[in-house]
Length: 267
Image (tube, rainbow, N blue to C red; front, side, top):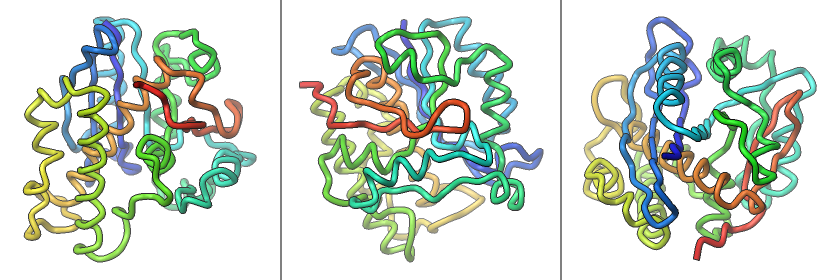
């Protein structure tokens, strides 16, 4: 059974004492009419544990496609963000440039380290095959939620849920919930059978009493991570099933981001 994994990776998840959560979502699909969620959570987890778990998945299922919101390949000449921004800056959905100096200077290199571990364990980090309609299994791909939202939800501007005060973030997350719930209900309603998905998409979950960011217990950031991992898992599913609607910004040698070239026409 095909498995599609979405990971919103904490950029500090390479440290022994992991202070922030990574969002993890797993979708399993018999066919496009029957795709279900078997895991959705935000947890503190080290990248070596993520890699081990993904390796176990490849032994149990085929194919396995993993979409990760984190830079997996970074060189001094990475131009992924520059290329992506040419298309998505007009939606305020561009990405900040990722550089080795910035990553290493801030000790937030979980993404590149995870990419190297996955590659050594047999994962293909090159999206070329899957974007051409073939698949070298298992495959791990770098994605970025904002451009995905713009295309999937037909937005004129990105959803503002990552910056600002707590009230502004909560307002953005409520909009995010609504758009994601509507999209899933229309295109993959069986995902909603998982109670954790329903909880993550229920407005009451985002209580005004939740802290914006917290290392202890639920917070707005906790649910943001889960929603982003769900977006990434949907991307993994669609990149395989609707490959012609997605493209690579940048290149495999220096780093890339895969994003929709148009709204995938599921129906």
